[in-house]
Image 1 (cartoon, helix red, strand yellow):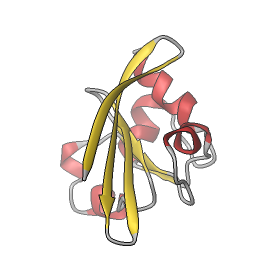
Image 2: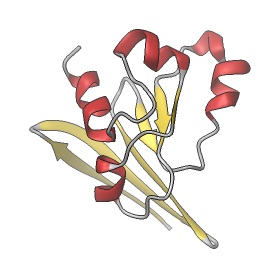
Image 3: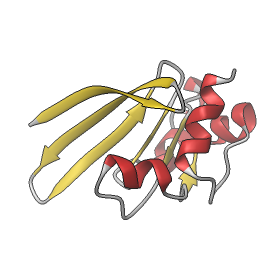
Length: 103
């Protein structure tokens, strides 16, 4: 099952997507610039093979809810997110997302 809904983080709009998969869940919070998601995201693929796309993305591991994803430290971020928005490993997901809204 796929569930999509608008969410607001500090008065900024984002989209929350939850995909229920066998034995796991895929959690994503996004806007039109970039996104954070659970550990299913392959950052190395984006950095190594899709670098020319300059994808703004990061992953957090061990999250099971949208609230956990918002408040979790980022475990890995794309090079483009680092360079363009100052994202870094350990940054809280909420702060990364809000940096997209302030640009």
